[in-house]
Amino acid sequence: MTELQALCEAGERLGFSHVAPLDCATLELRPEVRQMCETNSCHMYGRCWSCPPGCGTLEECRERVSHYEHGLIVQTVGELEDELDGETMMETEARHKETFTAFEKVLREKYPEMLVLGAGCCTRCGTCTYPDAPCRFPKQAFSSMEAYGLLVTQVCQANHLDYYYGPCTISYTSCYLLA
Image 1: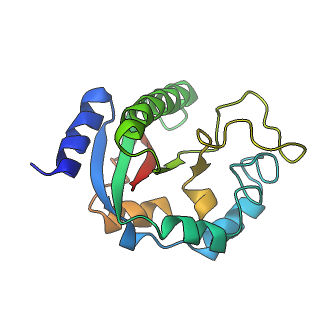
Image 2: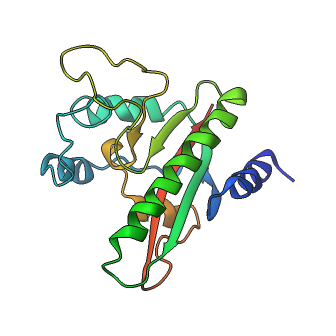
Image 3: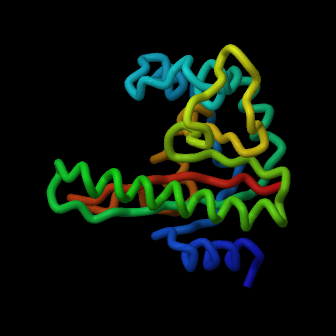
């Protein structure tokens, strides 16, 4: 068993629905994804260090990503009662973020310089200091995959991981780039 396979199994034991190896050569940082951030549909654009423009230009993000060769993609999938089951959507998101944080702690012991890209913006602090003061926890802060210009469906497809699990499901996807 390879090290990445062992890490995938560890992530699933911890609670992720799916974990797959990530080939960082497949990561395409796309300007059109970053431009979606500018529409501010999530209401976080220009409000925190982990979202654009606070997380840096696409070129700065590309430079950070270029230092990694492999990593892990992790997903938490929820089964919805119907397409409008907001309660389960929020529960699944909370479960994903909890598992995401727990697995990050495990991985940081072996990969202290890893780059973590989450599902949604950083939630380490109740209120971000952006833009008035530096980030309080720059080593623990994380950006979303989209903030880095990644089209999540493409990243999953390029790494042989499903993104869509059928009607009345929701999936939250994040990744860890390991150094």
